Image (tube, rainbow, N blue to C red; front, side, top):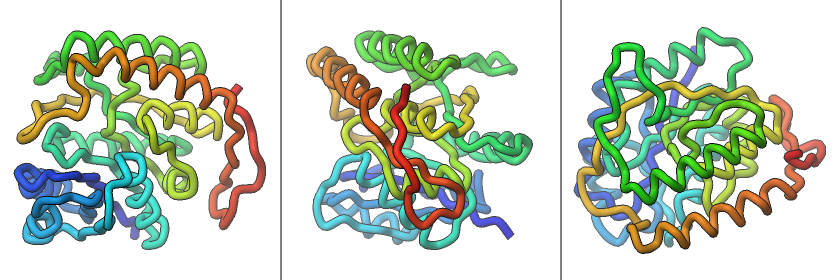
Length: 254
């Protein structure tokens, strides 16, 4: 019997975490829900437990990459076969989870599926939420660079709505980028010769709080991500084979 896990990284999301957990329970009842409380100073952990989620709490804030990797480590240690990342702010629509799972099951050898806000759905239903113009510009720039590097079309490199199979769980549990994880993870998947695709999804406006990257910080963020991509292209990464207890060799992205 396969085991499925929803990894929900959260930092000070007490206002949204209960509805996020409930959304997953309603639309993906076969998924266990793990909330990774990344050192929150509010009641995120208590609210998540009250909503029926398992909670892994960091004693201090590690950032989104550290929180997501903790979730993958939990998935690996508890023998989950499939994991999906779902943001704790309520932006990801859990109704898409079973769509992604059906695609993963239908394509042997597929390791990762990213939910893209920028692909058109067959039913013509467009995106319900649009980020700022400056952030969309940055996303398009990252998408073009990554598409050229990996040799396939990447439309939403900053999406945190991603489903992985067991091999990708093993990889991300051992090595996951911490600074700009969504973008850099695209390079990781390419470097390790994992197969990935994108599927169209809808994204909602966050329920509470605000993004850590505002309009005035977008340009600075773009520069930092581009530098991280350049470093990532030159970085040798251990290649994890299915079932390995440790990496066996190192390779460069290019």
